[in-house]
Length: 62
Image (cartoon, rainbow, N blue to C red; front, side, top):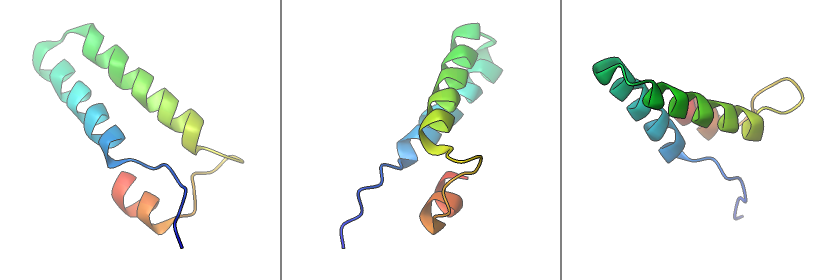
C-alpha cells in the first residue's frame, strides 16, 4: 500500500533552524519565518480539532 500523506521531516528541521537562528542573532526575520512555517503546518495538519492519529507523525514530527 502506498500512502499519499504529505508529512515531512523537513518542515520540522526548517522550523527549528529558524528558531535557533533567531535565538542566536535576535533577527526578527527568523522568528517570523518560524511562525509562518508553524502556522502553515498547523493549517495543513490540524483537522477536526486534533492532529493526525498517525504513529509516524506523532513520533517524528512531534
